[in-house]
Length: 146
Image 1 (cartoon, rainbow, N blue to C red):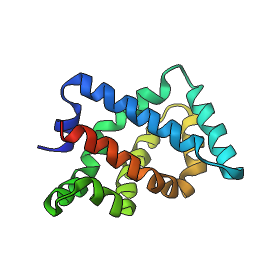
Image 2: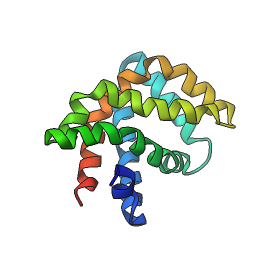
Image 3: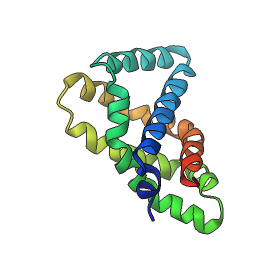
């Protein structure tokens, strides 16, 4: 059974994962400092302003694709005995898998602010995603084993 099947059913589990992922995003962005941190916080605020609930909506929409993209890495980790640790130690591959999903998604974005903001940060996005992988791995592990 893949991660999507385990984590997105029943629907209340999906809601909890989306909430945890949104909290993770908020925490990660809040932890950034310096000029790049200020710029990232400003861009995130602009995305949140697209419409109320926009970030949770996007997380909910891309979560199935993200879990599918992570499934091979997770499965490899299960074979090695610790899938959470494996996501973390494979953070570069994990980040690439997630960014592949968001890259495809942003190409379909109808709002110029979404595409423009993403394109502005895409060059440094892998670093930010890699920094978030340990927390994301914990979220996935929390629900994958329930």
